[in-house]
Length: 328
Length: 204
Image (tube, rainbow over all chains, first blue to last red; front, side):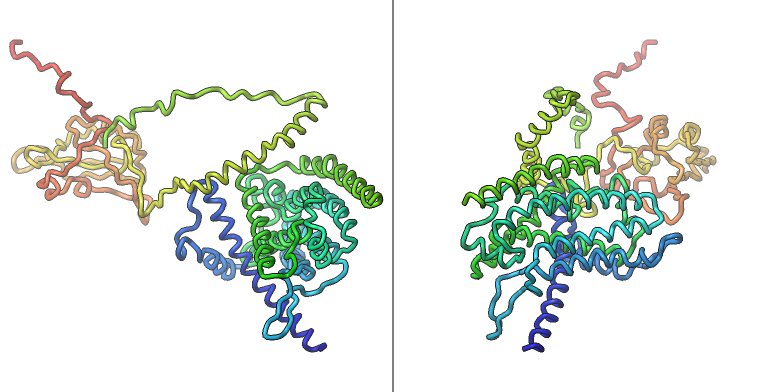
């Protein structure tokens, strides 16, 4: 039993690592295509049919590029920063159930690495550590744009974390558990949480955009203001690790939103599983969609939004939820 | 290709000024502005526009090496030397005006007297690395000999990329086939010129 569990866990870890590393690459393809179509362009077209092998070409380029450590950078921190981003993204995925449990060759597989009872807290915490990547990478880079980006990542961090935490508190009060499996099971019986907590859903969604650093809050690595910020001095695979981390984060947070608010994989049927993947795909698409449509906000506007608007609303939401639970 | 579509600069007569209100200065105005932006769902308009464009799939990409945009007849790319329609001989009379007027000094012309005691161009080169494609040479040429062509895809392994007289001259086989194209840009005869020109009376 013990050995079987170990082997199963290791296999699951390897599968998730491989699948989501590849998905990060394919995600860049989809991002480029979706953005291109929305901006009336074609996007990558030349490598493979409809440019489908573009991410392979990008991967070859990134893998074979020289790994440059510039002069004056704080070398050990500079080297470790991309690893922090990508590893925390994948560590956070340990508590996410990616599919309902299914039977494979008479063996029941739970597609979650560790169903810990503090699941969502763990995920948010570890994903929060992911911002140390831009922060340390930017500060170690000996580049003023990277330094600005590091400062901005601190700004983003103190802004969205409070909103993410508070907005999710009301659903947690409803469910009475932090495990994502329990969230899923709660929504089988009581309907999707988005129906009872629409405000919390919107706020967590907004926080997810800040968490992953996507466009309305893409100020950590703003290409047109601070030339990719923390990524300025990075090249080759270290820069690629930042990229994989960013896209893996987008996928994982899409899974989390679907699980928390949109019923997850439901009762575990095949249709439920496909619906679950559809929801995840929708949220991933929304990241790209918003990038095509919306401008970026300034750091001070993000702080204004999070502290002066969203946090009071979140607190009011918690109070109302508490009163309703107490009454009922 | 006709000139008319390039000459018409009036894209639309429907221009109007957009009515944009000033930014609010009072606290209440700012609050109302924030509320408006939140609940009037202006953000969704942007989302809808890009989604609509995605499903219309009306891309404007020109896949360049396979497809090319048409260029105007007045486009000034690498020079060409024309031949006379009547006799297929070179139009260039070796006057040297193009060399004289060239403001970037990129044209070099050398002439000699040939066996028929006519002036003949012995050397003619344009340094495309220096040429700014201003079109003065084509404008000043009294014989419509040097004109601009439409060849804009140039590559060279050095900055001094010369184009020689023989390369610019219309090939004889092309001339025999009658496919030499006239230049419509600087120095060219304006359309319907023969109706407007007054012939010199012989009575003087």
